[in-house]
Each structure stands twice: as structure tokens, then as C-alpha cells.
Length: 363
Image 1 (cartoon, rainbow, N blue to C red):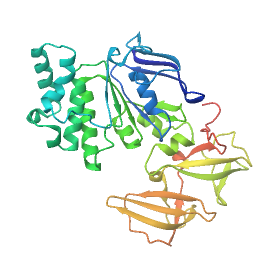
Image 2 (image 1 turned 90 degrees about the vertical axis):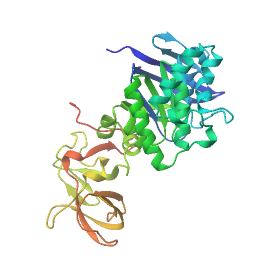
Image 3 (image 1 turned 60 degrees about the horizontal axis):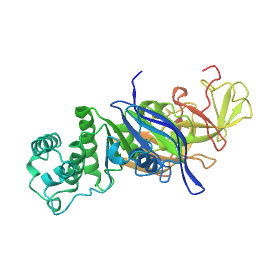
Image 4 (image 1 turned 60 degrees about the vertical axis):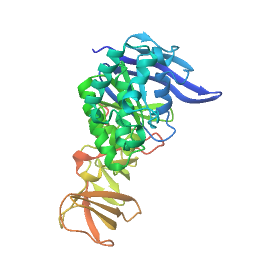
């Protein structure tokens, strides 16, 4: 097993009597790109700042490359942090901004020049070295901020929502740049975002947080295809997963909005009379052919996005769902369509507040 580059053991954080991070255990492997994702207030930035040493740890232990850094200053942890704000010195050139931290550390002038030139080449900002931040675009400034981190040759990069100040097009291009940077450098990277698209496209491992706790961690595919509960299933994916109220029936079938569906794949514990939630992603719902056994839905809104269309529907009992369509004719609002929920794409969840995934007991 790979040695953990960053290890969190029972990490807790409280502000006075208010606990905000609740006993998190996490191992991050050497060279892994890990993304902390979750809604505002879930504790992801607080957790990152504790790893950085910018927040005290109330309880628990943080180690980096096998060394306990829980009580060390940020400068002694072998980490660098890239923030949402670029925090560049406006009166300095790009070259001077990149070199500043190394000069403060009394690094040899020739070594400073070598590291600055190397970082500038990696980030494709070598033609900008004599400009000042005010002469740069937002994407160029973010590259300089990342370059300032690269020259310090850290063990671990920490990114705190670094792309949130950029427009949509720049965010896409910078995601590509950060992914390329990770491939080239091979450093461990921990990245905080509220944007699940960033998480899905960048991460080797996603850590989904809610209310200061880890709801689930795993690869993007694992999180997307095998969510552990309703929260994770609904948070990861855009549009979000559809959740429909269902009731178990005799003969291992179930009903949604009065329509009966076969129980193929239905967990054995969802007996007759048991209320639960069936989850299915928009891209997995099929528009049924005439005469097929399906559920009728009324089209409320049709969203045309070129190669993809989203159909917003309502069932007879008022439940809403979204259907993704990749081909076919446009569908008018107010029309009725027949929908099928293929058994291989159905997921089942408890209907209580925890919303845990239900699988067959032998699995």
C-alpha cells in the first residue's frame, strides 16, 4: 500500500462550544489529487486551513509524509497554498512576484533565477515575466499565483477555490492547466471547491463533506455511480439525480405515483408496504415507445442546449423529474410523454432523513 502523503486522524475543530469539524479520518496517497467538495458551510475550507496550519486543530493529528505537523507553523509543513484571491504584489513584476518568497528564504540568486524560469516555462508565462499584475488577465494572474507556489518545491499543494473569481470560459481552461500541472509535477494536491464539475474533472479521489463530516470518499466514477446516500447522489451530478417516492408491493414489485414497476434488482428488504426513494439519473431515463409499459409525465419545460436537451416533467402526484435527451424531436410544454426507468440504472434509498443507500443484504 502506498505511504500516505497526508494523514488526518480524528480531526476535530470547534469555535468555542460550536463544533464545526467532527472527527475526520483521511489518508491521501503520495501524488494523489484529492478534491474536498460540499455545500457552503460544510467545513471543507476549514479542513484545508487546518492542514495548512492557518487554523488550530482542536483535537486529532495531522501528518505530512510521516511527520506530525499538527502544531508546526505553516512555513515548516512543506506545503504551499493557492488562494481564491491572487494576492500578488502590484508594484512588482511577474518575475519579482515569483522570486519574492525565495528571496525571503535567502535562496541563492542563481537558484532563484533557475526556479523562476522553470516555473514560468511550465505555466507558459515566460513571455510575461517583466509585466506587472495590473497588465495581466485573470487567468494569467492565477498562473502567476500558482507559479509562486511551484518555485518553493513543496511536498503538498493546497488550493482553496482558486478558480471562483474567473469567468466560465477561463475556469474551463484553468482546470485543464491544473490537471496538466499535476501530471507534470506529480505532487500531492488537495483542492477545495463547491463546484462538483471541478471535482469530477480534476480529482483522483473526491471527498464529499456535509456538516463537518465525510459523507463519502472515492473516485469520481465510484461517487457518481455508487453514492452512499441521497445527499451524495443529489450533490454529485448536474442536473442532479431524480428521487421518486416509491412503495414496495407484493410479488417484489413497487409503485411510483400509482404505476407499478417490476422489482428486478429491488433489494429484498424493501418489502410490501415499505416506503423508499428510487433514484435515477436524467441520462438513464428512457422515453418509452408507444404501447410500452411506462409512467405518464407532463412536460413543464424544455431546455434545448444543442446536442443535449433537458425535459422538466411532473408526474400525476406532483413529483418532479428531469430527463436528458440526446436525440429526437423537440417536445412542447404541456404535452404528455411516457417514461421508463431501466432496472439496471435504478438506485434505492431509505426514505428517512439519513437517506442511506439500500442494497441487497448479501452484497
